[in-house]
Image (cartoon, rainbow, N blue to C red; front, side):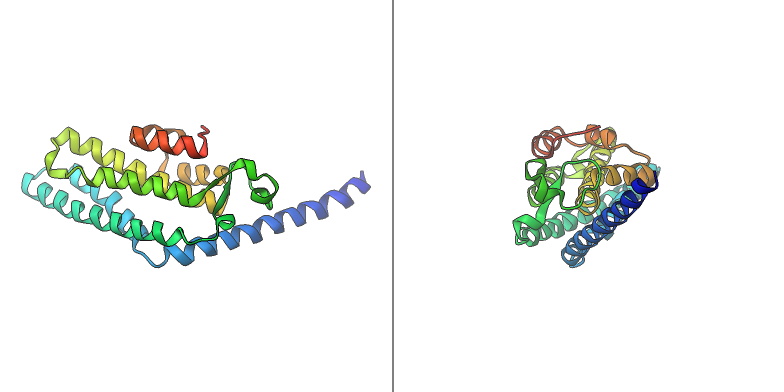
Length: 208
């Protein structure tokens, strides 16, 4: 038993260290590009703005809120498109994401067949935002606005999930999604637009 522990403990320590080093490198890589844009602030503004607009009873104030949100959506799309173009310059091997649910050191090198390209997923997200922004809020009836806001929010959550999956693992990303937004990965996938879900799942594979 003691012999097993003497071997197992160092292996666990090395494994944990290797995972943390690799994750820190991925966080730094994504942050170096994402930090150039206002994407996170705009996403937060939209999420909070949708809630305020949907709860507003006064028609004029509600209209003003939706108008502001339309501008924020357009700004987000512009920023996100520039971010996607920026990320396209990342060295291909550094943009690979492991489909293995748990973090495994050097997984993208050891199991290249179980990977997908972050840059391609971000392009899918950009197209999803573009389709939604092309539907002006003013053209929707109250139920349509609610449904659109719900779908747009789900698209934003899936973007966050993708970024955290790249930095950590799918399991960590899904756990953060549940902890911060009380939504499961499966629920978010079900809530995004059909075209987004089809394109996304075809590339990354979808797990519940």
